[in-house]
Amino acid sequence: MDQTVVDHTADYGPEEAAMQAYLREGEKRAYALGNRGPIRFTADGALHPEIVEAYWRCGFYVFEGVLKSDELADIERDLRDILDRLPVERGAPVDAKGRPALGVGCAAPNLLWSKPLGDPFGGTALANGRHQVKMFEPKAAADAPKEIVYLILGSLQFSEAALRVYGHPQLLAVAAAINGPDFAPFNEALFIKEPGRGASVAWHQDGVTHWDSPDWDEGVHGFNFMGQLYGCTPANGVWVVPGSHKLGKIDIKSVIAKAGSERLPEAVPMVCRPGDVCITNRQALHGSFANTSKDWRVTVNFGFHRRKSVLDVKGGGVHNKEAVYDAARIRERARMIGYAIDARRKRFPQETPFVYRLHAEAGETYRWDDAARAGVKDYNLLDLSI
Image (cartoon, rainbow, N blue to C red; front, side, top):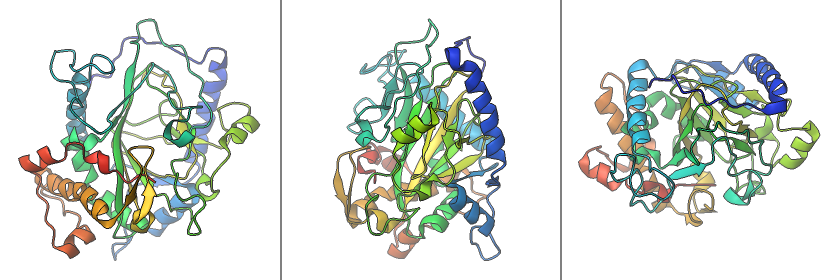
């Protein structure tokens, strides 16, 4: 994508100088953590212990250079198509060319809208009220549209490139190392932070279900992978408070009140180059600021759980309706892993495909073909949200 943009200049007004200083200092803190580098495994196939230590210490890790140039080109091609097919406005049935718009006819939620540079969740009861404090909303340029799409749920049905990332053998091996070989799916999304328009995401912790569980520990709510198409900067990327995944449920209002602003002093940005993939603990306190910069951020987002964290657990209420996640639902939702592995095998035949233990033990084989493409519509109705 041509990343040259019309000047949609926006800033933080009287707080701009303080914000720019915060971004610079945060980046310095981030690079001092020692939690970045390529995916590495030991001779016996285990995730390298230095990576495991850094992930559990910090609550996130930046895997460098995971997605290569050919895969990034595939993602960008799909992104162009997705942006071209967005509705002309919220609720519209057609795109700018008069074609049926992306997501039309879907029962599951998919397109999330915001005013440019807005914070649609902060300080509301949405998503179980986990975004406790509203972020500052800079004033967008006069030429900005009334609303923009900043998040696309159920993204694997709209992008085969994203589906193939979901089947990346090294990333799935990391998932097995962190959550066990019987790991279960969570959900998938595309985050789109357009220059001068991209919405903020208020400080929050993703976990909902297990805070008071006797089995609670620092990994019980799973993690997200965040694959970066264009990379991310302190201005447009996600910020994390290192170690906060160990603290249980945090009183975010008190934390922000103590800091005196949304610029939490201990937080650091996840700074990435194109093709880097972050892994982030869902219990970590994290958020992102409105994108007043001139750089795009497009994130291929997907998460995984421990099977025992979702089996026979009542979840939902954030990404879909509340339900008890029985073994049949988990099995049905996990078919996306099988489809992703096969889709990737066809595009990258030189790779050794990941073997998902539960499918192998059950003798299940999944083929990514036209029937599968038709069958994954609304697959995210079965997301496993906890």
